[in-house]
Length: 423
Image (tube, rainbow, N blue to C red; front, top):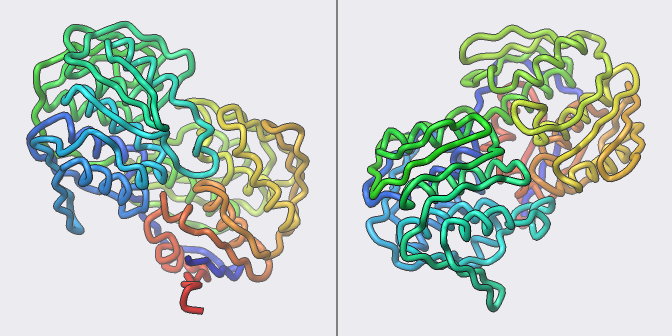
């Protein structure tokens, strides 16, 4: 096990680069199952979730050749169609392997997907199962495993009763090899969905409407493979922007797409956080005083739930009261207890709403990261706080942020990674 030791109040400055989007990487790996040819993936982030996804791919019979520049994936035939329980239990996105397996090989067997504390066992997979069965798959459950079988999937019309990014991406991948036409309604509209659809279309799929609420797919007999460059991680972009604002430090964020975080930048204009932007860069020019502003998380292009935790830290430094309303995940606001331990003035109204009163000085504490987004938010709070903060369970942070301590040191943060096994 490892932990971070952070000395607060270090002035940040310079440039930090954004990596490839985690939520795009975790979809293109299972998408490689759809073709017998080799796909070359560029800008693949070196994070724990990607490593677990590659483990699953190998275990199914896929070949992986990876270096610093790219990763080649190929699966001519499947050695098996059952997901490894150990790897699947660590990865919520393991569910994304089911549709491609079912579409190409007619069968998939898998345990309930795992992940971090806000995902493991609490985020249902009903939408996935309903979509698969709507396409003609037969579902059975035994010994803690789901099993799906279908000789040839059939196109269908499916309405998402709850908007779902992974559900939308999963059924797109499932439908590309189904017989006939599929229409998906009330779809999620995230940029990662459009990137996936554009790649599949370049390989012979027939997908229309990705990035809109209605997506139509005409099934094809086979698709080829090619090169997929993972788009910059918009959540990492927004997280670094919030970090700069909270630490009142000028910072340039490189290799990003500012257009993917317009909801955050619109709020920055309202609360007094200055910025400049270009096609692939964003410069934060923070003001000495930050105004409070209420947020309500919403599916893209609304305010991302994955930025709610960092934004809550930012509001501890704002001059006034702000309401944080989390509409997507019930347990995501529970991390504010750690901020109150650091001195924040936060009142939990209910599991979905919290009132933050600022500005308040934060003080270093010994804390444990409960999940990925809360973990990076505790890092931001530690950078702002007086004194030293110790963060345990940083595996959760490594799941989604490549070499976060190394990158933060390059812009002036006083952060060390300690291997507790060697203490």
